[in-house]
Length: 424
Image (cartoon, rainbow, N blue to C red; front, side, top):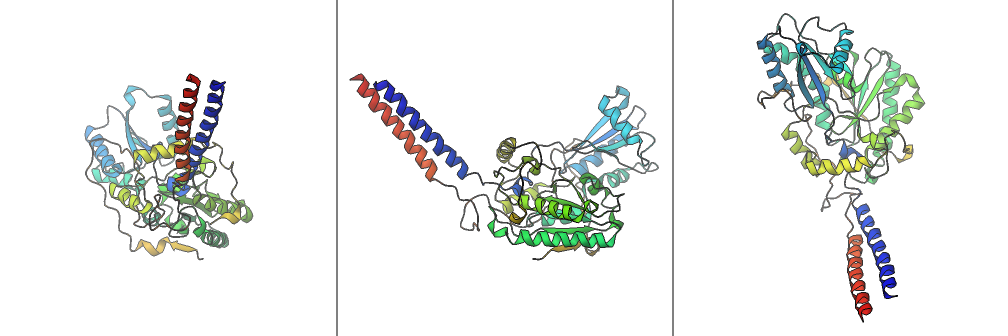
């Protein structure tokens, strides 16, 4: 009989410990927001530049390309892969080359440079066939990771809730409709920002890309899946380090549908990443960009955690692994979203824009390991409790852990008493 009591009390106390530990775990559940996750490169597949060459390709040309990839991709989420076609081609390589050959801008002779996106779309990288100097190669590669809009995007991303790229269509009325939709959605977002689990300094921002700037922003628009041949106005919504929220939104789908999509996308950004939201919302593609160690340090100071930390990546990967794989499985109410819409006209900043200085030193490898944007210098949520924590900041609860400790002590004490009685 004493042994029965021992087992019964042991089970009850272990259950109490389990409940207490679970409560303690939930108390720490708001460490990151969905927006926080967008600042972390979760060891996802980078953009890959394939350089196809053969035995007839001059070694000096290959050396120049290699140096250009080091200089331009040192701190970018792009890696370079050199493939000698004389060694035979894999099925994947053959598929890439066949796909690129359909492009009217494809080079007719080797070397052929192809960029592959994380979702395995292919685009030819054109270059001047008559000039194969180092300048030519860097001129060809730099726009993949650098542009005026990306510089803007990274400057404001640390303070802003999100950034929507308004890609102008040919219909002026549709462009104005897009502005109206965004203005309404942003007003809703701004009104609820004080209630978010973690504070964000600035409401969503809008950057307009006129059609005359499509060529200069071609790599950015391609990476987002924006169809530049379409006459329709399109919206690409980004957060964190240029991570895409959902898919580009086409105004030709109908204004009511667009309004719902915009509000739903913006409503996701400020949520707690433990909220039960489908995790695929936090795993959209990053745009190709530069992200230097200095950018990462600035981000760490602003966010309150180091987005490049291995421990942070492990923790976030664990959170993401618990989610559903089907986007949209969790519905966000429109009135749970987050005055004034700020529309940044690309024309207004071009005169003041200074091209980024390419990195000229680096490891003697053709590829960079991680992606890194031109970051901003502003503060957003803090993941650790301090005197400056704003409304909704998460403060870890210690009571649950205290309960767990007391339960363990009680269990040990009870076991000791029952064993003593059983022995006597």
